[in-house]
Image 1 (cartoon, rainbow, N blue to C red):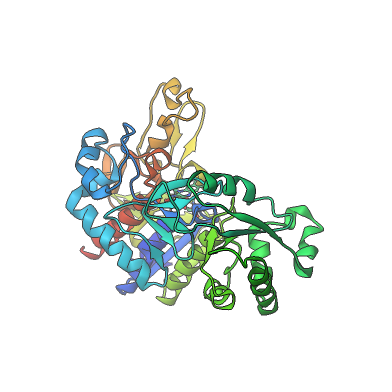
Image 2 (image 1 turned 90 degrees about the vertical axis):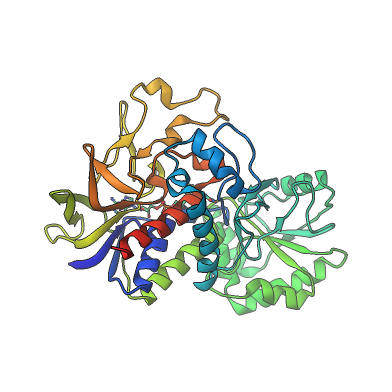
Length: 418
Ligand SMILES: Cc1cc2nc3c(=O)[nH]c(=O)nc-3n(C[C@H](O)[C@H](O)[C@H](O)COP(=O)(O)OP(=O)(O)OC[C@H]3O[C@@H](n4cnc5c(N)ncnc54)[C@H](O)[C@@H]3O)c2cc1C
């Protein structure tokens, strides 16, 4: 099977790269073994919230030079300030263009609400989720917070307590109706995605609007867990119109309905542009000719090779098994690319569980154009993007989605410019 570019991994990074390339006429395939980190997403994309030494960042662009001093192999350091700025700006337009509406700007972080009701800085937040431009206040004063009776992945009381600390007083309400009662018979079925399917039905949406309107009389806004709009557009807009009040969503514990919706949207745009998306197949190994990857093999296709002018590895970090940690090493399982990790295992962890964990910064080595390196040699047609890269700590810095999106756009540019 021949393609211009073969992308291994269909998460945020692989999909953004694939959409970029296929929109420019490249014939691309994405091979992806499973679901991605987007299924666990907060509904916000982080760019840079703090430097490795812990200094808080509110304007990411202004911090890139200092970041380069502290983290010389960081993906943003490889891009440099000008490219970082250009790509971050273009990413915002790109997401809008492909139908993913967000709020926020790379010029200054805003605040998102966590499932526990605290505020955290971020870059872009999917539309309809509650955000604030200030850490110490919310744009609502006395909202009604609703939850579905028996839904355990959304803690209304914790959220109300946190909101109270910054001057927002909430009333708490519970929703129930027959289709939800059916789910509740088995507690493992009471998950965000299943509930969202119930709300996808028009009659249930109408009933929900009726309940919200009746119970939120004295409030200035309505807050719901993000359990609507899995397969339907304009749900929040519909509820706002029916209740005549602003309606906001808050993220729940995973699985994440806004994250899954984003994944579905990216995949469908990729396919609309002619991309071939193979879910449920795992790339096992590859052949090399000179300093190029010549053939790729997957579990489902056995001896039939995938042949591409370019190959992109976007297989994520430990979570998605793009990196594997054993008792004495961290390795990349497809190409056995060179990986940065501490040889002394004691140095992988910090005993303070809340401190930055060194293993988070382990990842594959690349040159400045994000080309993979095997036994010290740069592979000319193998590009790496996203969570698999070395030199950054997505959790501690708050840079996960930013690295995935910006590195994907950058390598797509490199491939197209060849
Ligand atoms: C649980 C979790 C939650 C996160 N939440 C956020 C958030 O809210 N905001 C944020 O900014 N960042 C978040 N991050 C950081 C996250 O890493 C990035 O935001 C980004 O989504 C990573 O995208 P990716 O495409 O690089 O990797 P992934 O999303 O991990 O995707 C990698 C894909 O590669 C596939 N794959 C792996 N090996 C193979 C193989 N051999 N063959 C074929 N396919 C393979 C996997 O099945 C997976 O689909 C989160 C990370 C995790 C782990």
